[in-house]
Length: 375
Image (cartoon, rainbow, N blue to C red):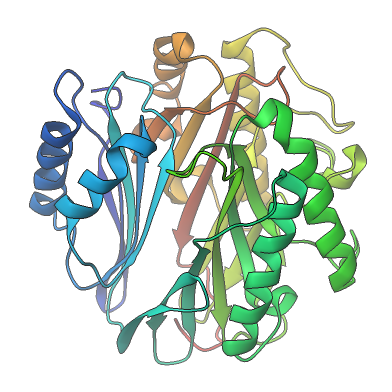
């Protein structure tokens, strides 16, 4: 297994015990999809996965058009947010998973809403929700990006707010990114213009990466994380402009990361991070080892400038343009803080052909502030 030396599950423990659990697991290659999935889910259950506190369950599969029906049948009906993305595991397996469990929920709601799915995790003071649209009609990536945000506008209204106030992290999966990413950017930039978002008011943290769905004509799919109940000052944007440029320098619009500060902890959502410098240039062109090192350095600085460290990471996803780089990148990661972090490695090209690797992740630490209610 590609990440055999890394843990597959980590917990964050508060004063009242373990409250959040994160999983990243990859199947052993060489069997049928059904056999690999059955074995992977058994391992997940043995580690405590799949219980009532499961909030997110995302599968990365090698052939979603063919595998989607079997996956739905085998995992059964779940009260969590389930996402499936066509991003083959880099070790040659057919399926990998990542999961996020939130303990001590007061309740959880799974709702079909206007052509999509919303799952709410209800805590004492906040309501976290994951949302994703199922349908599409536009024939191009720009139009489909606009459709995603128009649907999200309706979901945010049902949650009692607006997208700029409630949505703090998106994961955007783009079929054939070399051809369709420009439309994604144009569509997203147009939506952010409509919201009145600027570099000064800040955008939304995001990963935009190659990935497909079971519908061949669907060029984009977006998973979104929202949080209701936050007060001014709890949302803080992660920046290190002397290491990696703001994204608007090269005419895209997303935040490098976002920190959500609660009374008892902080959540850090690192956007897709690559080997980039303060001017927006690719660092170490053609050198995957150098790019991996610079990507980790950029992540380290983003975390440290926001009151955390790479050791606070609880899960990570590593995206490779060329799966032939998998062992080279794996060896570099095993000599880094990510060796102690559950992570999956996938074949998923980045938005610029010159970028060979990208990494995103979620971190949690106890850097809360008593002015705010605990999660």
